[in-house]
Amino acid sequence: MIELSASQPFAGLHLPFSHGATRLSAIVPARMTMIAPFPGKTEALVKLLGGFPAPGEVFEPHLRLVWAGREQALAFGEGLPDGLETCASLNDQSDSWAGAILEGEDAKAVLARLVAMDLRALPAPSSARTMLGHLPLLLVKESEAEFQLWTYRSMAGSLKNDLDQAMRSVAARRAVT
Amino acid sequence: MRLPCPCCGWRDLREFTCIGAADYLERPTADAPPEAWDAYLHVRDNPAGPARELWYHDPCGTWLVVERDTVMHAVTGSRAVEDAQ
Image (cartoon, rainbow over all chains, first blue to last red; front, top):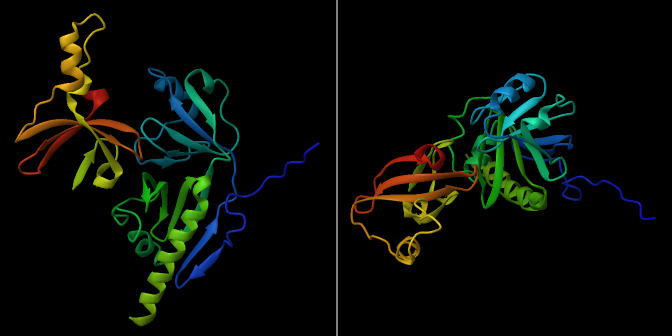
C-alpha cells in the first residue's frame, strides 16, 4: 500500500526569508471553500452565511469570507452552515492554492514592481483579483504593511522567485539611498 | 491603456483579453437563414470612431462590453455583459 504524505505548497522553497525591511512567509494551508451562489439564491445564502462579500470585500461574520472573483467568495476555515449546498456551488480548494504573507514597511514598494494596481488606495482589509508579474493573483490587503498573496499551487515557485527578486531590488535600493 | 471593469475598477490592459466586436453577443436563432449566420461569424464593421467591443477581465472572470473610440483611443464606458443584456 502506498503511503501518501501531505506536503506544503512552498516545500523546498526556503520560506520564510527576509530582504531588507520585508519578510516573506508561507501560510499553512487550512480549509478553503470556493462559494458561488446559484442564480436567485443569494438572499438565502446571505441568511445562512451572515453576508456575502461584494467586490473587494473581506469580512468575518462567522467564517472569514474573501471576495475572490465575480460572484465568488473564498471561505477560510471549517464549519460551513448546513444547507449551504442548496443555494451555492461549494468547491473545496484547500490544496489548490499557495498562500504567502509579505510584510514590512517596504511591502508596498516590493509589490509596486510586480502588481499593476495602486495598493495604497485599497482599504484594509480588502481583496483584489489581479496579476503578480505573469501569475494570477488573489491579493488580500490586511494592513498597510501586510499582504496575503494567493496564487495557484503549481505556481508557488514562480511566486517565490518573482518576490525574491523584487525584495532584493528594493532592499538594495534602500541600502544606497 | 486602462479599462474599467464593473467589478474591479480601472485596471491595466494586461489583465484583459479582447474578444472582438460586441456583435458576438447577438447570436442568430437556430432557424435563422445561412446569411444571418455568415454575418454573425464573419462580417464586421471596421469603425473609425466609437466602437462597442467584447472584452474579458481574466482575473475576476467578468465579460464586459467596452465602448471606446478607435480614433481617439478614449474609453468611454463599460458594462458587464450580464447587465448590458
